[in-house]
Length: 323
Image (cartoon, rainbow, N blue to C red; front, side):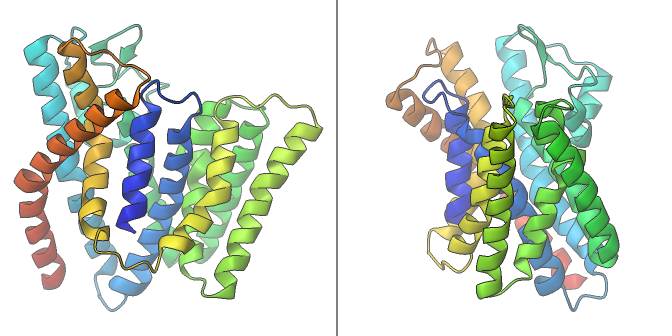
């Protein structure tokens, strides 16, 4: 599903430019959440099903898939802001350790991990809060695969928190989009979809879409003013199972190269926009600007893939085969 991941990464990139007023990136992130659960179930129940150390092997696989390119992007961003004194960076042991551990960044709203001195203290690459949520979800999913009752209970609790957030009872942005406690059920849905086949997949997608539509309808009937990003999250929830079902069996040649680029673009489009800013090209609502950002992000991502990810990929495959 590399083509789908690439399109979703472009949606996230576009959402961080002024081109669109609709937050298409939020929709894409929700689809990413469900896709991540789908992939975890595929790895656990299909790829590593006969591996006697499959939990350890799966964790190693995810670590080597996520962290090396993330570390490359962190070093790239750090070098750039220090060399250019971009937004007066302030590195401390606390915020550097938080960035290296990744998971703490998911809680940026409660702790100050800021490095860049913008209008508010910002993380070095603010997008990585979602990686923190994803890594935590991997651990809970593995626990849920071993103990299915736990997965059901954790997903149910998460859904209750999500509904409260969507209807504004608790903070919509924090608990309905960012923190794992409110969005874990989306990962769980992805893992359950992987275990459906044929008509069951269609039925599953229909149920999920109907639940999202029902929540939106109830909110409208009750006269609830949806806060950011309730509409976008519900839309992502409604379309995610259909997109996954549509792209699951598409064996396109572009899947592998575009899939490899997708994560790199996700990590490098922020420094790409910084570079343009330093060069006197501010953010603008034009296709030309977006096109330049995409090209520059691809160049930065390709460098990281060639210099960092591919050597690690060879080691990752050897480690998996050995286990």
